[in-house]
Length: 290
Image (cartoon, rainbow, N blue to C red; front, top):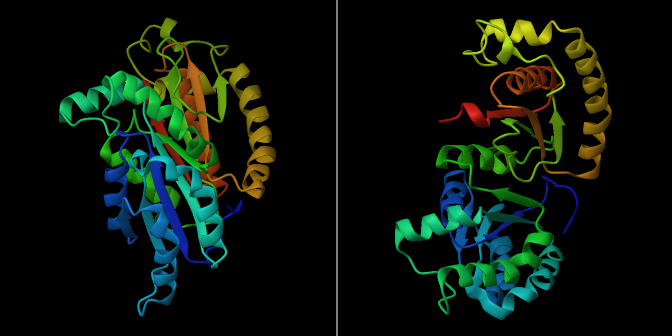
């Protein structure tokens, strides 16, 4: 697979992942975004399908193909199939969807649908599938954990990554509390627990980092000013290198003790500063989201 997108080429997005992680939902969302979508197309037909797309009277330049564990042993042939499709002048990327074990089990129990690997218990089937799908996960350029995502946030993420197929690298910033645990799959993590804590200031404890009083308290500290100066210089150096390398997106976590005050303030400040520099930025406050 090519390391960087080329908007002049037809684009195939292969959507795969763990059962219950949202592949079918993502396929429907991509269809709404203008992609020609085919779910569960056999791998043996994928190269022929690519040829048909190129020769169609109405060329299909954005295609999403869903594949999953039901392909069985033929999944090992996916890298070869991708090479052949790219040899036809089509850009191919892989999106792998996963979720935390507890969330996958909950989704299967709520829908009462059996796991595609029907031998053994649900837990055993999930573990076998995870092992079988690991090579696909390793080759995927995009890996998304859908556990913390609502349908709305999943669609927003897909729009950011695939809606316009822009060259710039979106930055996702997550504030969180260390006592609750960080989001999964962060590229960078900042610990801002060294900053003075508004939790111990009367009148600020009950507020959040979105309130002006808390913002002023955190941002006016000398430690904060020095930290943000170094942080801005660090990211100004690092982000262009990530973009040059072809990184599709960057996930940055900012954590404090409870995820209510300091991490929220720093995340909001950082988002505004990066936006002013021309970056696409999305902010999610993990501990403030219902």
